Image 1 (cartoon, rainbow, N blue to C red):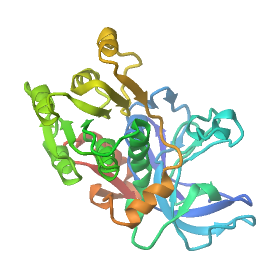
Image 2: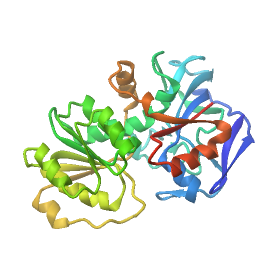
Image 3: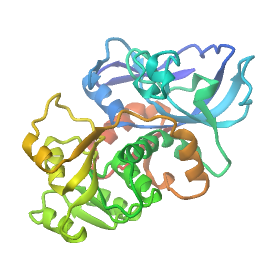
Length: 343
């Protein structure tokens, strides 16, 4: 099979590699579409993302969907020819985290495109049957690939325990921020405010359900938010920008007794917080690490037309131009909403 292999930071080569051999509980999938994630760009540009470092050649890409080509002898729910979305993290299913329903925290998870595990910028991948989700005909491969980042947004809203009619703010309208907007809308949020520095991303925020958009850095941003929320502030703020100043600013948007949901990953390992302000206002801070059991819910919402992932795809590249896709996603943040590699 052909694969786009990251040899070293800044260099991807198309190579011929053996087709994966499946086990009795696995399926072989011909990859059709792969979304470019920010973590892919970090690995490509710098050789690292968060605490993970690339130490040997690796295939990137973990937002993927494709067609089932082979099934193992013990596979029961999936058949050859099925269109499937791929959940890229396979946990051990034995540890305390997995057994208590928190498999996203499994210390032995095998996650696509996280060193040393290969990802999906290639023609074929294999996954256990339970982590390939059959899709209805009305969901495209591109939309199916974006179920992975949408699952993050759904899980963030679940962590927030969002109530009907609550006022929320999304701080940062990149792909994950836009996913949070759509997830908050279907969960019944009353007001959905969106903050970003890029005009195009704000226009997409409006398209997907934001009731008001605010340019980051505006001197009257806090006043505008208070005016929209009976001078109280928002019940929940989803911080998806990952920018230190954005994180600090987000606290000012939250009402007393409200919640900050930390979703965006920052390049810094430590950020200073106004500790007494948090106590005086009894602000809860909840973090989000990937997702748990969100794929079936995401597929139902897509099938019913309650969310729109397809229109987030703004730029497409073939497998042979994976390096150009990663460069484009890095260099054109004001233009690209979601870049997809199509096979």
